[in-house]
Amino acid sequence: MRRLIECGVLLAVVIMAAGCETPEPIQTGHEILSVPDRTISVQQMAQRLGLAVEEDTPSMVTLRNGANRVMVIPDPAGQTYVNGMRVGPEGGFVRVRGILFVPETLEADIRSALRPLEPAIHVPVPKPLPERTRPSLARAYRIVVDPGHGGKDPGTISRVGLKEKTITLPVAKELARLLRQDGFEVIMTRQSDVFVELDERAGIANRFSADLFVSIHADACPDPFMRGFAVYTCRDPSTGSRGVATAVDESLHGASLEGLGIRQANYRVLVLTQCPAILVELGYLSNGLDAEMLADRANQARLARSIADGIAAYFSR
Image 1 (tube, one colour):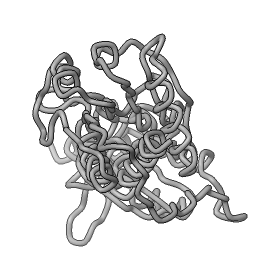
Image 2 (cartoon, one colour):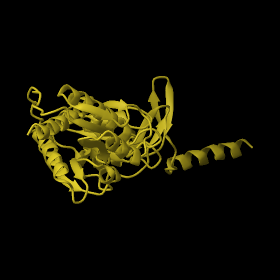
Image 3 (cartoon, one colour):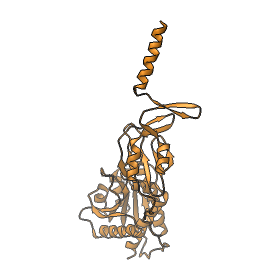
Image 4 (cartoon, one colour):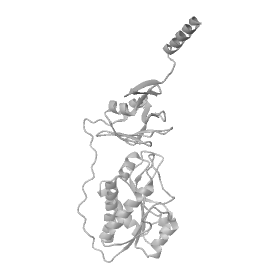
């Protein structure tokens, strides 16, 4: 019996030495973690790549340095984005006691997509906006500002869970504030997170005999590289719609924002309104860079300011 036990022990040692795949123990303080083979902790990977862990939540881990932003989406079919561009394999991420481990191969994939820190990357910085001057208005024009979506309708949702309705409302509120400051009468289709039917949005503009209807949205596209704002009119727009769209487009471009120009589409709110009407797509939530820009309060205010300036320029002509 003793010899049989010794043989069993020897056999176990031989099997382990032959390379059976067993979790690799990682020493962390007084606790040993068992993690999958061929993985690396996201903190260790960040250190090797010269990145800092900026955010670590159940839904996203963000790594950053002076020239790069890396987003790791750690769900079962998760993905990795470097400066808005998808890299590496899908999935393979696992959390062990709150620590995220990723495939070792991801380090090389991220490294090949990083922008170099030296020489310094020139990132266009939006030029400072001049002090606002109140427009010279012939009368108090009435403008209906429409924050897209709301309530049960979240609109577009970014890969990291950013909802369009949470972008459109603060931009629309700031736009309304600036327009009132300029002497316009402003009516909003919603002022909180509530659902409003499309027909009702246009109906508000028609019932109040508005001089302009402005709908605020954010876009999405299967192509993750698509980005930039766009100003829409309906097909075969009125002279007023075309004029306001041009003024707003010029103002947004003047603030050094990337744009796709003036476009036409028969969106319901544009077709049903009985006054000049435009719809502004602030950017693409499906693009990592645009989504980051749209989530920033300062950029939201900048967008609102540019739209207000464009409207004021049109009506003061």
